[in-house]
Image (cartoon, rainbow, N blue to C red):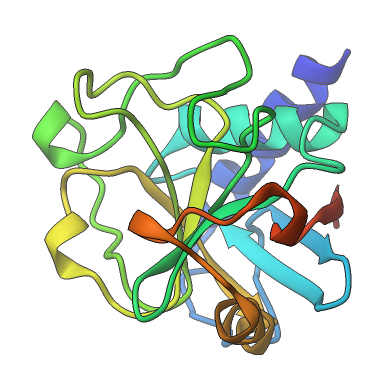
Amino acid sequence: MRKFRIIAMLAAAFWLGACGNTEDTGAGSTGDRPVVRMEVAGFGDITLELYPEYAPETVANFLGLVESGFYDGLTFHRIIDGFMIQGGDPDGNGTGGSGENIVGEFSANGHDNPLLHERGTISMARNMVSMDSASSQFFIMHQTGAFLDGDYAAFGRVIEGIEVVDAIVEAATAGQNGAVAPADQPVITRMVIE
């Protein structure tokens, strides 16, 4: 049932997009794309607009994890000022995932994905060994990181709450390579599909 709802949502987004609604409606409106609201304890909400037309498997995977409650209670375990905040690891240390990997939907892996790693972009984390190793970990760009373009699967952007990303970065006490001690990791209270 869950997969059917996600497939129906993606099909509706593609169908409605094909009906000529190509206008970028701005930060407060998303047209026909899926929207996810992430609640971060003590910081506020981050609202994400997702782009299934560029990364369909990535968006379907993310929505499925959101709908199942997978991200609820997980943390941002890696935070680098001027770069990004990373979360979605059930182990809280950068080594965990959902148990399933997805294909890397980016140009270096043979997929046409024009999304850039600009401030506010959400993208999938992966290991350096396999382009198809993304699972549940994601990162949100604090500042633009063009060196990631074409090598990581960007699949959406922050449309509300970029100041929450800034506040998370400002409050972070990160160590080497942005690692945050478990007791200091900002908690994703829950994510919901709007």
